[in-house]
Image (cartoon, rainbow over all chains, first blue to last red; front, side, top):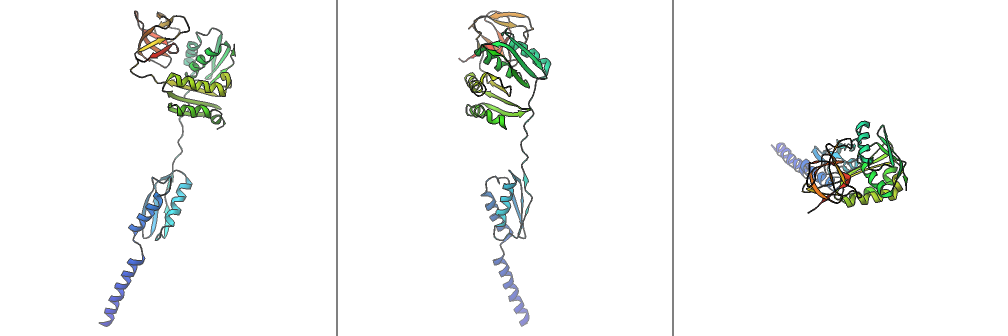
Length: 161
Length: 141
């Protein structure tokens, strides 16, 4: 009887001891979330905690932001280890520049240069070559028109009078 | 990246002036700047900067394609030729037959902008047809 009572007391003491010394996963999770949320570029991160092991997931701007979140999580009391499943944002790839094919480009360059009889234009592989002479105000008008036709390049060899 | 630095003043001015859909791309040693300017004055201002960075546009390393956003409410355009009449053509192209003319500084009806270069217009008295957009200036009422 005596032994059983002592055991029971010990068990209660042990349980209490565990509860008071070991922070609960939910509390750790809240603390890690708070620490990570304080970082810049960590807006998309999510945290899970199980048995003191924190798992980070979500998309980070770069490696540095991912590492910073891991360091912040490790510094939280009660975190035994950190599994960093964060991924890095794919860089935004710009769409390639659209270049007009030679046939429609030749036609629209002819339209653009028609009113400047001293200008000759040639189109080859998307490159518009302008030769001849032109006045400065007309050069700007012509360049504005030709640049809007989606050429690959404008090779302006015009002499400005 | 060198080209983006060379024309940085231009791209900065474009974003500061409210150019929308601004795209700056470098491909095969040519920088392509595309966007839509809120007014013709802003487009011209960008061309002044371009001319300052690359006088007379001789380097061949930039394609500056900034169009002017024409409000849908614009229905009238002014003929801004140097002095002559403006041809109105059957279709969009200088190879198309001329169906009419509009006088210098005349205000005519804008029917639609069929492309960036060719706009469908209707003169005061006459058949509608296509005119080169360079010679048409939107009239805001």
